[in-house]
Image 1: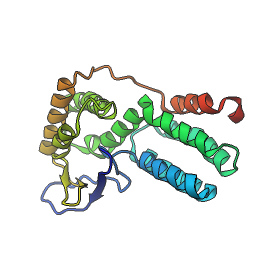
Image 2: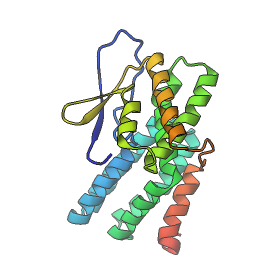
Image 3: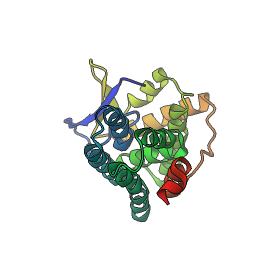
Image 4: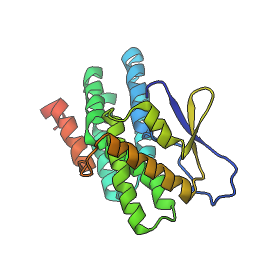
Length: 228
């Protein structure tokens, strides 16, 4: 879905409000850190403003983790692992290509699926009045659907069918995610997501990862003993 933009904006509704997060931008509310790091990498490659880029990336990471429903300790560990990369980059201890390689590895890892789903769960599913069985099934559906989106096994047209239940497409191509989402809309979104995941034959046992350990392995895999 390159080139599309995603935002959340207030809207009037008679439904009970369920507030979203301002940092939810990107494909299926893609975590702000992913979008920001792509932008930052391009800027850094041209301007070499390491300190500025590090500050922006750090802010994006903090906002994204805050928007997720990861356990508090896990959020701290992820911040710590990514923080050592940011500080090393700021201090000119790692190169721009190495920084880019780390970002690419993060985007291609199961970590992206987990964090994106975590944010969606925290901002919509966990704030709904769906019963425990629906929420449990919804989590499985979200993991399958997002996995299919990331792997490009679910096409853009089908993605938009799912998004249409919780977001509105603007004339300029921007998706505006609703701050107020009814249980009916949420159920419709999950049913649509399940339909597309089934059609794409996405398995239910989507890989689970330890976020901080995944980040550590990616960083160490790129930099080796340099970051020890």
